[in-house]
Image 1 (tube, helix red, strand yellow):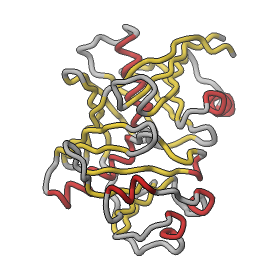
Image 2: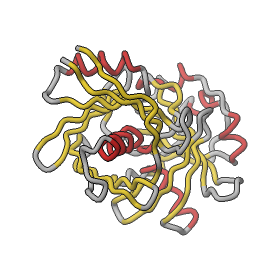
Image 3: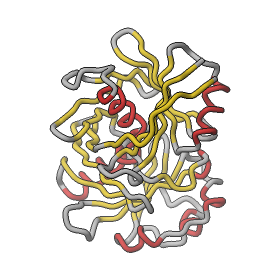
Image 4: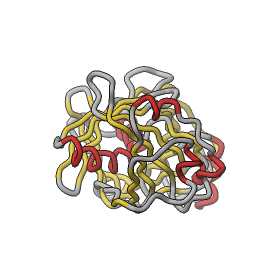
Length: 263
């Protein structure tokens, strides 16, 4: 069985930056253990598996070790592949049927706009050992169905973090988002995302984290349209628009590899 395969750098307009994702286009379902083995072989933070179905595309996301319920950058990568390969007209909306419901993507000028659920982080008491695992003082903490969201003092703190990933992995969440108000021009907030329990010590650019960051910073900045910068080594930029219970994530993508996976 030959499977079309792409590697796409998402939330960037430059190759070898942003967040790389593999996109596999299937013509039939494969066993879950096969999907997980492919994701481990690709060894990106997420591998997306696309399969055409009535009124859109079935879409699943796997890290090298687990399946996840929501992934922004691999969805953006999948939409980019559909348009760039001619499988979807550029004026058509991409519809994805996922574990998080129907997600859509559309081209807006030079950017892709993903329509995702907002994932607000509700305030919680500071979890025991979290500040020690991160190696910094915590201003406040929230939690949603997937992650902790930790606000720290400033952008410099976010940039300088060297967390103890083994200790972070002991917490009962997919990952930990660390954020602060931006000091850089043209950016509203900055973040990093650590998910060692999901097999990803640090994710370069995390769309699903911005589903929590958008309502968090909208409440604090008094705006619904903002720009976030993820301060990983590769770096990436995510535009956000909050609209009630939905968040539009805006970004660009670049294909860096196209080939065939042989099963």
